[in-house]
Image (cartoon, rainbow, N blue to C red; front, side):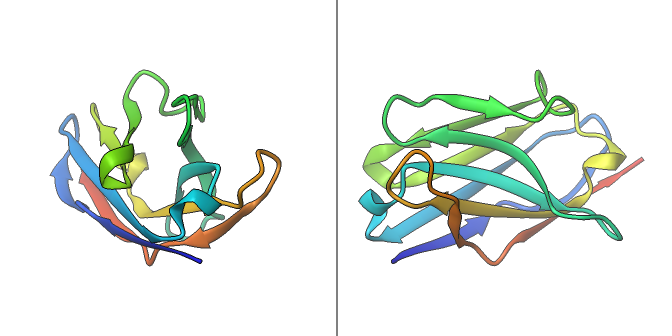
Length: 120
């Protein structure tokens, strides 16, 4: 099992920045990839960004590419999401998630979420 705890959410003005953190504990080697997802009010949960623990291979949804940066610190078992040039439409609850051990495994570990609110 892998436990995930997010932090770093808050209220920020449009154009501002926030950095989210996701601390992983437990059997972290059981997770191949870590991702960030978000759920805006009245919308479905959507993928934001992901990174592999080994090699640091990243991927982003097009709407955040160039504004958000995902990174990881293997020594601290922590994944970060640096969010710059924030827009009102980035307002959502952000969730950290981890896949199973294989590259094709789905996301099975989830954090409790952290609220990000961007005021326009």
